[in-house]
Image 1 (cartoon, helix red, strand yellow):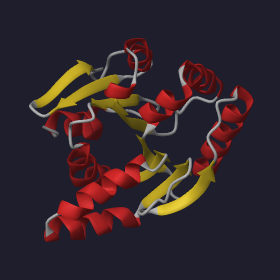
Image 2: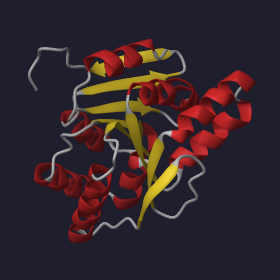
Image 3: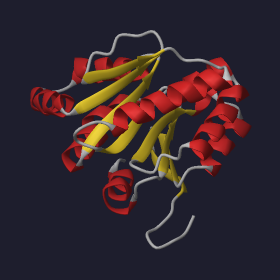
Image 4: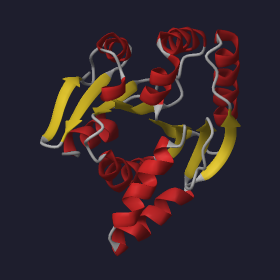
Length: 209
């Protein structure tokens, strides 16, 4: 199931691109995220995680409970290189927490937080190659369309040009229009189901946005 995504992330993706991994609430996305993609990404370069409301931590715990012994050892190695920005009330149980952010729907505070996160990550001694985002769909669900408006303003003001962004999106909590907007600003979108993977959008090397 993960081969198409892995192939794209490790071969096709460039800095500044946003890649969506869409899934429903019924798909055990912890297997793909923590068993496959996180080890692959950390082996290729630094990884920073934006964890909204502890969604990444919950997925990590779900995988940790059922991980075979050899996979768990690899998971521990993966965690050593992870840097985490904790957004919202939660307990992050993996990696090193760089910053704790109180989420805000106010546009000024949103931009302030966004700038603070980008500045903190940019100052890391080892520049990350990837940014992985957990829980952004839930953040939109709680905050509504204002969050998307703030996101567009933030990306237009300070583009994410220094790393590739991989965002796990729970489509069950979003409106059709909200998901369409996210897909419109992404370079690639993959939809994960129990039966496999659907490529919703992909940019091959050499193509322009």
